[in-house]
Every structure is written in structure tokens, then in C-alpha cells.
Amino acid sequence: MSDPLNIVGQMPPDAPPPEGHVSHSRLERVLRSGRFAVTAELNPPDSADPADVYEAAQPLGEVADAINATDASGANCHMSSIGICALLTRAGYSPVYQISCRDRNRIAIQGDVLGAAALGVQNVLCLTGDGVGVGDQPGAKPVFDFDSMTLIRTIRTMRDDGAFLSGRKITSRPKLFIGAAENPCIPPYEWRPNRLAKKIAAGADFIQTNYIFDIPLFETFMQRIRDEGLDEKVFLIAGVGPLASARAARWMRSNVPGIHIPDPVIERLEKAEKPSEEGKRICIELLQQVRQIKGVSGVHLMAYRREHLVSSIIEESGILAGRRRKKMPGHR
Image (cartoon, rainbow, N blue to C red; front, side):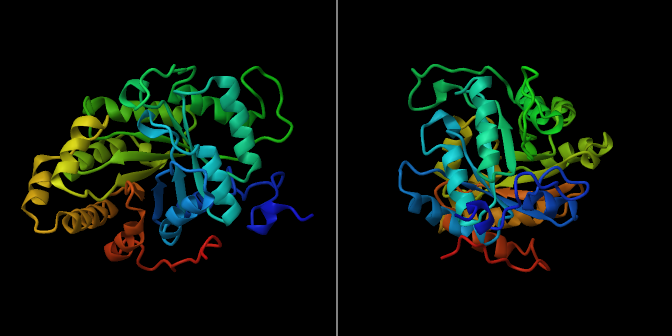
């Protein structure tokens, strides 16, 4: 029987990464080549049907260099991140395996990292995770054996040193492009670059930010990043997304941890005849503005339950002008 990883064009797990790379990740290749990268978030289904994953992935794969599989974000249960990653790699997509520290201890996490790498996963995003109190099962028992910083260090140890935290050797180390999250638009603003520097020192290769709706505030953050030379040490991918309505924006601002949406954005949605279309226009404008900020290496598009908009948003923004549109193996 042929190796299923080779069917979708993955490199053998024991093959060395290209020179200067830590993985075979398409996202890493794009970023290290200096091209502007696009990642997108796949909202996991409340379903055991793989067709639901592929339906959501198709419009993302048309424009994205990697697709994030969220790990019970908001402390709500959905299809698992590692399950979605397995389906995406099987279809030829390049996933980002999100790991939340909330639900598993260090033994389970290290085992999952090896399992994900064996399935062909090449990117991982390390998150502390939202507390169980914000989710729909607040009686769940939180774990938090790690936080994001120790998770980053652990995966770097597995990759670079070929060892578990116990010191026991790994016979075939995982070749992973390690990511972390940042939230530039939440106070204390002056503390954010220091937090980012610690994640870089822990081993983060790339950063994906939370939603950016306040460009001046983000520009101030990026100026601090450049002043400290952090933009030379990590690839920073700015998060954006379309808002469906003023009501949805207010709900997000009040109920989703870490979301900052300025009043003028909400007022613009309120005055629009078609708020959903206006939310899409705002997103396109934000993409275009973020694209011009020095030190930003790409964008991360988060369109909750609106994946069908992602391809047109990226195309209409023009941020990938000059890059040839790719046809993913997962397209049917």
C-alpha cells in the first residue's frame, strides 16, 4: 500500500527541511521568501461528518497559505482541532494545529504533537486558552498544566532537541513551524511588545494577532515592535475579519475576551443600508491598510461562520496582487 502522505504531496517525515527552514510548511516557505502570507480560520463543525469540514475549507484554500483549525475556542466544544487537521492534510490543505492549554496536561499535549506531526501537520499555534467560565459548559474542569509560553518552549524542545520534557529522547522529532498569538489592541499597551519578545525567546517562529479594528492603535504597536527589532525575529500576521452587523459587533466587544472594536466602526455599521456588505467593505479596507504597515508579514482572516466570504474578500482587497492563484488538491 502506498504512503497516504505522499498522495497529497507531503515530504517523508524523516526528510530534512530546506536549508534555513525548520519545517516543510508552505506557510514557512511563503514567509521566508518575503511574500505576503494569508492564513484563515476554519470554524469547526458540531458534526462528525468530514464533508462539513471540506465545505468550510474550500473557499479558504483558494487564497490561504494555511488554514487554522481552532481548538474549542471560547471554551465551547466542537470537532477537535487534531481531527480537523487530519482531514485537511488528507485533502492536501496545509493546516495550523491550534493547541489550547485549558483542556489537556503535558503528557497528552506532547503525545498529540507527535501524532499531529505524523499525520502531516507542519504548523502549530500555541494558546493558553479561554477559561471554562466563558463557554457553554462552565462546570468543566480546567487543566492549564501549561500556559502558552511553556507550551512554546516544550514544542521547541521536542523539535530542536528531540526530547520530551522528561529528557527521554524522541526517535523522529516533529518538524514544526511554531506560532503564538498576540493581542496588540488590549491594555496595557506598553506591555504588549515585552510579552511578544518573551514568546519569541521561548521559540515562536510566527505570530497571529487577534482581530485588528483600530489601525492607529495597531500602528503604534508595530512602531514599538520595529523600535525593539522584533520584526526581524518573527513573522507577524495581523488578524482581521468581517462584521455582520452593529449588533454583532457590540456583542463581540462585550462578550468575547480580547476584542476591541472602536465606536466609529460600529456607527458605520449602524448607518449602512446593508450592514453585512458594509462589514465586508470595512474588512477589505482594513486588509489594505494593514498590508502597508512595515513589519507585517501577512494577514489572518477570521470570518466566523462566514467562510464563504473569505476568497472574495482577499481577491477584492488586492493584497495578493502579483501572486498566482493556486488550485488546492482539496478542491472538488
